[in-house]
Length: 560
Image (cartoon, rainbow, N blue to C red; front, top):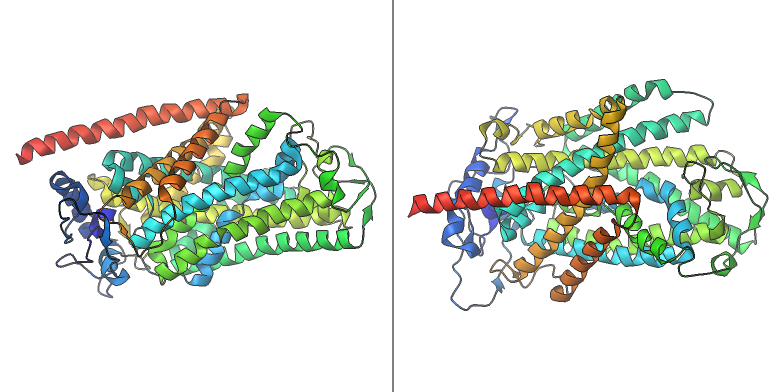
């Protein structure tokens, strides 16, 4: 269902629109034919009026010279007439999905490298990047509040920037999800092997089977019902939160009692970590804003940015959330608190225990997990096993969310596509989930172990996977531009979930995303992905824009 199906200003309904509830007489797979027809009709309507790009809905005409913001929010029920998904996610699910989207494996394993780059000033970088990502979420949240029946925020790019950019963003985002999913399934098996290795059990030869079992389990969860997905994410997030809170509490106790620890060997570290003590002086001793130079400080922004990547996932769940206009604003507004607790709080807790100058790279460039270090210093010999169990959970949560999101985006692309073959994926099952789109996405992710078996293919895949992270920056920029266009459109509702000072905050976020992309050219290991991302933008983006221009020109000539 595209945004054009719901761009009615007064909340009118499509004549003859079907109910979102799948009747008991329908087959297990229900074609989304009405959504496809409505989507196609929008191409014709776009020529008559950009501000009323509708497909079967009755849009109130805008008076000449009238200012935007006169529209009122249509009811969710009226907007949901063509929403075939089930609103099975509760407030509890969405809140923990939002938390899970904020906390990735990078916090547990990669924070040591970021601390080594800039020392205590990394805290300020996390706060700054978190504030920008909050602005991105406020922009998405405002547009989703306007029409909470949309399956993806990409629809707003299509709506306000044109179908060319919409096609580029939709396909690019889905490809990014699949590529990240392929890296996550590899990470899950690697962490699983590492976890059992701490108990003397070697499972390295069975990585392919581990990946298959994990993917099959998570795909099954996604196919059962959206509520099953929500419950899985709730418990995944609960496990991650428990470890972070336990680490913070452990650090507080160690500081209060003035804890001293001996030199010990940390799992994942080449050498022996020196003896030390817990105290806030570990933060200040030898403090320098950029201890490794300003180049390293600039590089830390991209590292932290990618730690927040996919924070926008909660915006994909809106069309399947109960009472979305109440739940969505709450979930988004609490992002800042989550950043302060789970990132800033965790980093401060780590650095008051482990002096920041103690983070040294191994021979292969890797770093020991700061979480393992803290718990090991506290006397937990099984700290490595505990942390890697949670890391497996975090990676599984990421893969679970990627399957969910990839399935919804491919479903949307199939619904909007003029191709009869692709239309076959634009259906929902009797359980009201896009089963075919989920299965196709999972099948592509399953190619990961095959690709990793061939060195040359694996090297090319690493480049494409890295480039995907660069491409997502373009999508974020387009999202902010779409938000700015929404605020100046007749669709804008003044009583919605408004982002304050949108002209300034939209421009600030766009400037920051451009800055992050520029930093990709500063280091040799990120320069290749940055170039590949630009090539993708020019080639595929150019194709989408030109194809849409010529298609529209031919259609316009036919209508004259």
